[in-house]
Amino acid sequence: MLINGYRREYLRGDLVAGLAVTALMVPHGMAYAELAGVPAVTGLYTTVAAVLAYAILGPSRLLLVGPDSSLAPLIAAAIALTASDGDPATAIAIAAMLALMTGAVCVAAGLARLGSIAELLSRPVQLGYLNGLAIVMLVSQLSKLAGFSVDGDMPIEQGAEFVSGVADGRVDATVVVLGLVALATIVTAARVSPKIPGVLIAVVASIVAVRTLGLVDDGVDVIGALPSGFPTPSWPRIELSTVPSLAVASLGLAWVTLTDTTALSRGFAARTGERVDPNREIVALGASNVAAGLFGGFPVSASTTRTTTNMASGGHTQLVGVVSATLVLALLVGGSGLVEQLPSTTLAAIIIAAAIHLFDLRQLRWLFVARRSEFALCVVATGAVVLLGVLTGLAVAVVLSLANFVRQLWRPYDAVLGRVDGRKGYHDLTRHPDARRVPGLVLFRFDAPLFFANADHFARRVHEILDEADDPIDRIVVAAEPITDIDTSAAAMLESLLDDLEQRGVQLVFAEIKGPVKDRLRQYGLYDRLGEHGFPSTIGRAVKAHVNDHDVDWTNWDD
Image (cartoon, rainbow, N blue to C red; front, side):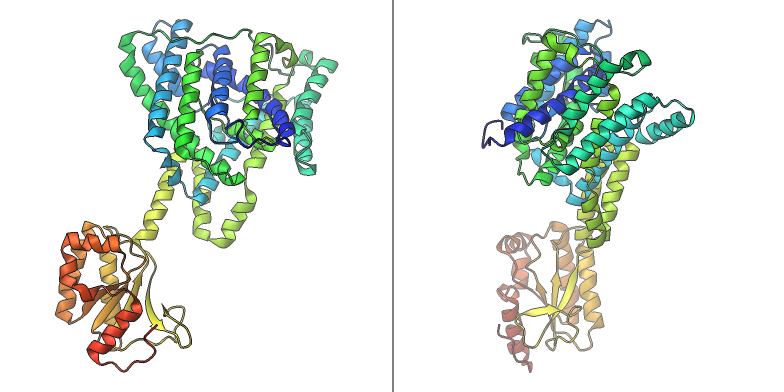
């Protein structure tokens, strides 16, 4: 939230970041509005209302919301479906109602505590997702930095068209110089000291250069004059017949907004060490959409570019959003001349610098060294975002996280345990091959819950261990502390396994099993079959019972 825990030393960074973010809010808001099928000025209305609402209610110190490229095509499709007359006023009303409905869905999702959907992304996959976003941002701005435009929507298309444009001589030398100087200024300032407002210096210097040298006449593209005025809050008027279609569209918009925002919020929170409640995040996002709808705007989501620029510019709190919204409002009311000659190449430089800041090469290197399998997941997630698009890439990232989770449970680590002289407890024979095994007894640890995907694997491992034993086995003790649940499929497997073991004259025992899991076994009828003696409280007691029952020559078994 805006005021909670605010420190005086934050003020300078927040003001500088607010100026930097404003330079992105104006052109992005207008562009995404046109993409959504409404007048460009509504993008600025949306930005002011949504950013202020989130600054008041949002839990994240750095996240910024606003018009988003991933939502705009969905909004345009909904407008085209329900506003066949092409009237701009009708389109605005439909877009505003979509914002209100989307906001209501998000608030309901947050109150229902569905914010944990962000937890479906593991840290490596999350890193890959953010790195993919950084690449998408970088590639999308290369042509603007060079002074020409491309038509492609995907990074591969944009990159290919950029290379083709360079080969065809479409590069504007003046634009490139302006952009590279701005980029060098931002990057150098960040490396020298985070207190140097590199983005602000680049913006002011670019405007001064364009004005002083008359570069507009030389073909340098600038953002131009802004429309003036700001609407009063009102309820959009639409035909009742359009409500069902808009309700369906709002569900889709809410899902995209929710998944994108919670994942992005969690990713940036991990960067800063901040802890954000995803349910509060969704409620605040819903309120931002409602605010946008009341002021004639359209649905909003978290903004990767603005949030990254906020971080790169030294922002600390949501005062950044307040500063930015205030500046946009001032521009709307009568100050458009201040930025109308800001060159587009400088905006491209700001985004590229933010992308460089977002790409976490250090963590990527650490993953490569620490765990290659998770490094591979990270790279695949990055590739999915770059090759398939941000939203599809996010879906792939979620699937990858779930698949990796299932893989770890599907074939979990297991171990046969033995006694190491001079050490308490029982230890993995793979790591301690000299450990002593209790005659006639197998101590077997299975490091996962027992459920449908690994139940048969558990049974096979038990039979394999028994078959490979050098001496006859009378009892197998499962070190069951890691087994946090047993589902009905696993229960059926245990029934069959017990039948097989009884025929072989082997007793099955679960040591250190948790109370809730024991309750499950009671419900399945397995507790009575195993008997009270089938659940010793410790492995040591299980070993002691075996030694006593079978008169085994064994010492050092009582821990």
